Image (tube, rainbow, N blue to C red; front, top):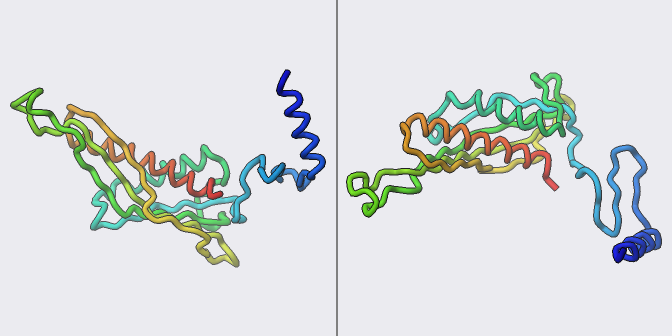
Length: 192
């Protein structure tokens, strides 16, 4: 019951100071400088094309990953639903280009000599980190115009293992790419 006076007071204050409201269907509500509702994007993109990602061969020696990572990014945008993902640039209002620029796979934990003298120094945990540059283009008069970009967006995955390192490495890189896809989607839709 102690909340009633507080809520009533806020309502009176809101009415007294004015509540900015655009009465169009998708417009957010602003009260006392705070905005309720979906963030307003600065672009006019509704349909987004995501072409196959590119990579820097000197830094990312995993060309087989390109289609898998492209599909992970498309999947993230499809789940998020801010943009309608379309298969061709001809159908799109905008385009998201992604370039893998670095891939790091390093051991992070080792067997201690006190625990097992014969296995001392053998790696038991690894971290895979994938970096990408991303650029969003909006089509204006049929030509792509860059409207924003981010460098070295990171996806990572930490893994404990006693399994075959080659299988473990591939799996860890895929999971790091999945994390990267989530971060790319967040960068695109939550830029406020």
